Each structure stands twice: as C-alpha cells, then as structure tokens.
Length: 285
Image (spheres, rainbow, N blue to C red):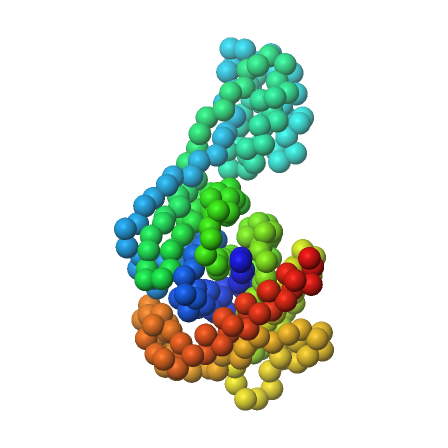
C-alpha cells in the first residue's frame, strides 16, 4: 500500500508524520520525494547506504551537420533551444529531455549527452528501508529524480510512506500519482487553512482518497478543523502541540522510538489510515 503525506507548505509537520508513521509499521519503506530539501534521513540515520546517480538526456548539436533550418527550435515548447550567431544553442536548465528535437532534426545533427542532476540513496534503519532522492543544487526540476524513486519502488512488498515535497506543484503531482491514499497535514491557523485548501483541491483533482491530520493541535479555535467540518473531510488524528515533542524533533529523534506515549498515538494513526485506505480500495473494486 502506498500512502502519500502532503502539506501546503514546509514546516507543517509532513516529514514528522511520515517518519514516525513509517517507523510505526511492522515493516515499511520510507521514500523521501522532497528532493530539494530531503531531511527524513537525518532522523533515520540509515546504515549500509548505497548511492545511485541520476542523469537526464540533453541534446548536443553537431554544428558541422546543422543547416540552420530551426526545426528543433520551433518544436521545443520549453524554449530550451535557440538559433543565434549561425548555430543552435541549448539551454540545459530548461530542457525537459523529451528527445523530440533529436527525432525531428532532418540533418541528424542532434545527439544526446547525459547530465547528472542528482542521486538516490538507499539504507536501512531498524524496521524501515530508507530511500532518499536528492536533487543537485541549481537544477530546475526534481521530477526526473522522483520518477526514478517511485519507478524503482513499484516492486516493493512492504507498505510505502511517500514524504512529498511541500506545496502543490508538479513535483507533488508526480509524487501522489500512484498513491493509494493521501494524508494532508494541517496547522491550526488561518494561513494553515490556505495551505490545506491547496492540497485538498489537488487530491480531489487526482481523485485520491484522503484524510487530514491536524498537527500542533490546541484546545481552542482551530480554523483548519472548522474547514474540515465544513467540507466534511475526515480528521484522522489530532496531534497535540507539545514542547517535549518539539524537543525530540529538533534533536533529530524519532518520537515513536523515544517515547511509548507517541508510539501509541502513531499506532492508532497507522491503524486508522490502513483501515481508511483498505475501505476505499474495496469500495472501488
């Protein structure tokens, strides 16, 4: 079962929920798709780490063969190619590696070269296999790294927890495409409602079953809770605002491994999510 954890912005508690949920399961795979700033591994401190480089294909133009017809330039909708000073110029940063320019070039003047954009690291931490995507600084899009992360995980037999990037951009869409269930993490503020609404609209668009975890919960007015009630959204858990929890988190400790109180809380959340996901799967078969 694939469970994706989303939030409308960073700092809401998405990684906190993902890490502790994966550590609660009897056996699981934690996949960090927040490739621009992955930090799940800082909590897990995985052992026996194996690294794999991730590269994309970038066009390379042979000026001796190019006749300056501009077929490739006119084809590229991302403006990754331009013709100036009697030659084709390639802008690696905006190339989407579709290969169309190479296919259409009438002179066969375009080949492809590899460009490394990041890496994937795999390691083990107790009952959790930790898989982390890392995008190189300065790269425009983490989508190729996320695609590789999730493609390689299709044969996994254990439950998978997918720690998504924050927000609702294309990297998040790529992360939830094959998820069986989505957990939306929300803060108890008006700004938190704005962010919650972003991911709420996204999971509805993708027709994914979902529920909400209210993080840093206080026994007072909670705009995020009101939003859920108005929209009949299932609240999976309310995790209380707790200084002790904040201290564990800031020290890079996994709460469910450090304190039985939090282990019990996340065991309840794990059971709830599993039941919700199984019920949704059954209702669509």
